[in-house]
Length: 487
Length: 136
Image (cartoon, rainbow over all chains, first blue to last red):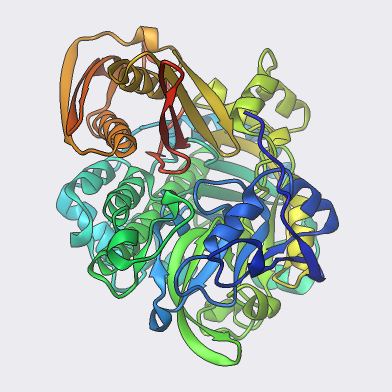
């Protein structure tokens, strides 16, 4: 099915920012703003993602504008790469579609004190050991088993719960968004089905675009911030991209089946059923918020256990403890989440529900929610790219608070559909091609490698240049993959 | 008759059939063709039955696929054969399959969820057409 090109208005209103006026579509309460360079807007026009930005602008209680990052692509309901903030005092809604099925999908970056030359001779052994140790692929269960009571505790306490079992250290929590615990989550609002799905999957990667990569710092763009983050040229790091697994999908699914009746009940119209939402202050809204927060805490636990397994593999391959190898967590940040945050909206300080669906929090220097160690420079922002080119470490900057409710991009964004990428990869050996580029890759599924091939994504460098120039976040270090495990 | 169609980050299932019963059964087969590399490797060793109430055909299709996906993930099952009886007030569906066996089944995609986005069950000439986008 050919996708229609977006034919609506896109007016340039500033550096790397384009406006869809609210007159474009009936029901829009605010404008749409898409952050994109001239080069990227040409790609973005090619599908209906801008129309989805306009649809989000119809949500009750939306503030300022419906926003999209340069890695925006066509999603279901919300576009991927969207940000919207709603004000509960203004009839604002909460939308599970604005968070996504994979609640608290996110990324963490773990440092090492190893350099490229230390790791290169061991890279095959290392990737193999990571691949066979860390469960990846569809439906895989992990080595950590939690009964239903423990799974609820994971959601209630976050990664703090697994620290007691020697699966992490206090410092890990301090370097996780919200210290790894979103307050007021209620595990008892999570259905038994969701809990059951969560019992076996904590510490598993999953499939799709999730990955664990061994990366090397390829370029340092801001020496001072890199120093504050403890990053230097040729240093080896581990990047982990995963979310809350089946538990999170089920929480979203459960909520949507209730929310699909809400437009009628609360008397509002939506242009797409997948935008289903409920007033923040409604029984449906409150229940979803409590369950979503609990699922987000489970997501932090999942990445904590993935990191722990990576630490164990490195220790085994290099014959030194992970502490000796300096495997400290730089930062863990969510990119599918909704959070209650304080922002200035047209000169008024308000508490709003910021939905980040494929967008990353990017708080600037001085913000109280940035860990103390980084408060002088800003929050680390981890941007996963594709498995052949690069990923990035950015730092939150002041423009994000003015323009995007403290948010920036979340990745490269797809350029090809999965079916097109799979067709394109037919008959090719993607792993061999990657090897020629200096990347050792192992995947649980052949289809997965083809669908996730570098060509299927936009160039993450272009995405990052755009948010840098728009002052949503600034470039700190470019990371190049040398080892990849995929689901 | 079914096929997968493209949707940037996800997958679309498109099904055509002469009647609603076949349409719903084929939609389930299409879903599991996205989950398993070769649906022909799934043997019909056990069966599960799904009973659903509802009058909206699109929501019924959604709920039928959603239930199968949940059973598959929760109980580590894969399904390969389906029979459905669609009524005005609901449906009765049966799926045959077996526990997932990594030695024989190659998983292709982890379908996270069925979505409501552009969900469609419509008349198509003398028959029916359904489209469902699933989140990968």
